[in-house]
Image 1 (tube, one colour):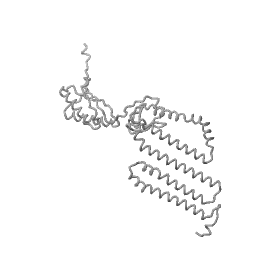
Image 2 (cartoon, helix red, strand yellow):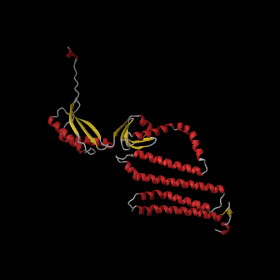
Image 3 (cartoon, helix red, strand yellow):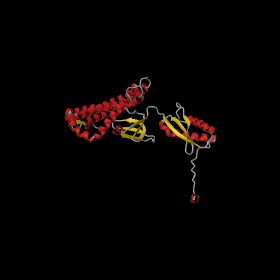
Image 4 (cartoon, helix red, strand yellow):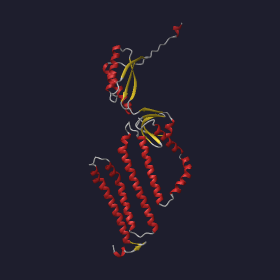
Length: 359
């Protein structure tokens, strides 16, 4: 490019100055990508050799924010090489400072969240811990909300807004917002009740308003339940606290199953004893049955058309109850067929009396 062309001045800067500023931006972007790949490869391999997890978390959470910070720094340096109107330079500085604020807040949020997940969450999941997983989740979310609110206030103040006046204005409009957000606020208060009263924990099996499943998340607005059909249902916290909550499993996943076998009235006493022993052995050998609990099989009653034998056993995992019951029933049927034990058949006799018999 001709030197005379580069010396041409446009809006107070030579064309060469614009090219140099653009070059600084491109170099900063290239440098940021280089730093990213260094952290992605070399730094991760280095910290992987240490026993501490904190340095791994630091490298994982700092790589993206650091690359953004380098790119923003390049734009700042490039802008400093140009002669710009005061209002343009001021606006660029305000935007760049806002980006730096967002970048630093992003890093703090990621780093603190990862540290909590690595060190605090395992301790909170222990039974003897005073801090449970639900409370930890809400505290983490509250921290992130407060962190970003502070960052937002700082950015507004940097752009010249009167933060005090903004907060006062929010107070005046707060009534209207509260009325519009009444259902949301009710759900938030419902969530607070769940956190303080603790009728269930994450992982418990509950029944609420005809819905049964495993609690997988308790949020400010709703609680999510994983049903046996493998679907996730979100129930507003207001509905949960206003209805009867049945905690089926806490925290033991075993569940009791009761069944009845109907044997033929032709079954002898010896065969009845054998049927009870065979059924008990079949239950014990079925996959999914709890090995910690002895199954109970006994002759319960003389039924209308059968000798009723009751089965009582526990399934090891309530989430696999249907599968386990199916395996137990199939095992009992195969064992009975092998031993020649007959199930009862419901037989109804119909007697017809002619009118002549009444004479």
